[in-house]
Length: 49
Image (tube, rainbow, N blue to C red; front, top):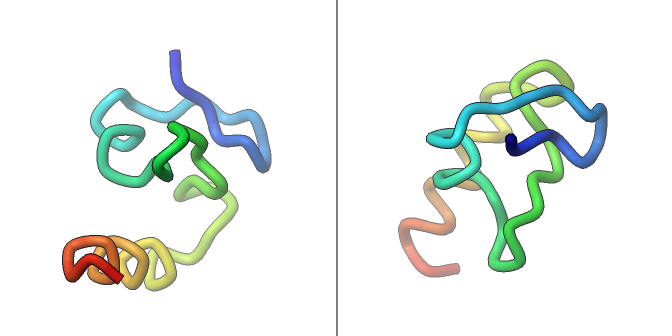
């Protein structure tokens, strides 16, 4: 089961697929990060930044 590397909370496979970095690490989940920050990272990755 994937988990947040910051707070050790469980995250869904879908969340991990979308928000994990290139090494599969999840640096922040919804519980320990602002949703705006997660959305911003998702946009940057979609643009290939």
